[in-house]
Image (cartoon, rainbow, N blue to C red; front, top):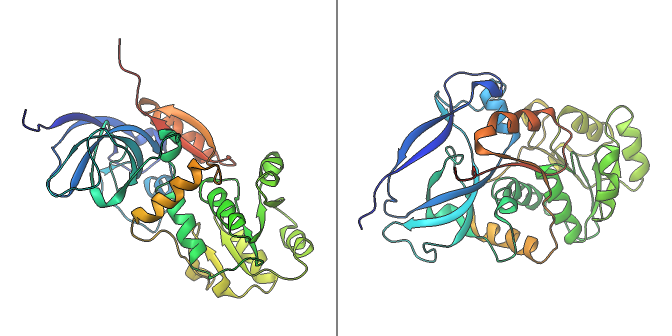
Length: 311
């Protein structure tokens, strides 16, 4: 049987605003072309940047209408000409610029990696963007075992992965988080401090010998505290706000790098890296999922999953 298009719902919006502007529309997803794979969607990770873009609060401008979703995981249905190393039936995860939240996902084979046995697709769905962002940001500072770093929002999607990666490399990690996440963080080798008023003093007390680098996922508060403590601007990295406004670095995820995805997935598979799921919602409840994400102060990722088959 020759490949054929698949009718597919996709999450889309035609105007800027809150979660209520999103809806499900039906499109046709073509068979994979050369170098592409078509994946049956199982789960997708939500990212705060998508909420900022939708609301018009981001410096990233995407023309309307916008098809939502970057991170996905699922099962390969078909592969296009020239694709090697990935076959129908493989469980994969990856990231594309748009349209990951759809019943069928069409993606270049070069942006996906296999999901190891024992790793749930819901977990893998939150690794491709958040995980590689954490990896690339951490790599940008040339840290070594024994360095001391601060990670803001260290219980969140990017911060939680970055903190654990650093601990795994022998780096001392001080992380800002709400009190409800402190026990979870300590169990993973992270030294938690409360965010909010008095942060500079708490960081100074936690690191009297100085701070090597700061990784910010929260915004102004962490950056201003770090600068006040004398951390050099080039040693402060933010993915949460305009880095140029503070003269700091803004290293986020680079191009999708499957070997990095493989390494992240292997760390999840062997238990080194814990990627908690804050909540899951079916794709049809994507508005509720984003409202939950945008309320903030979460542990881990918010994930949308494929809707259950109708009876």
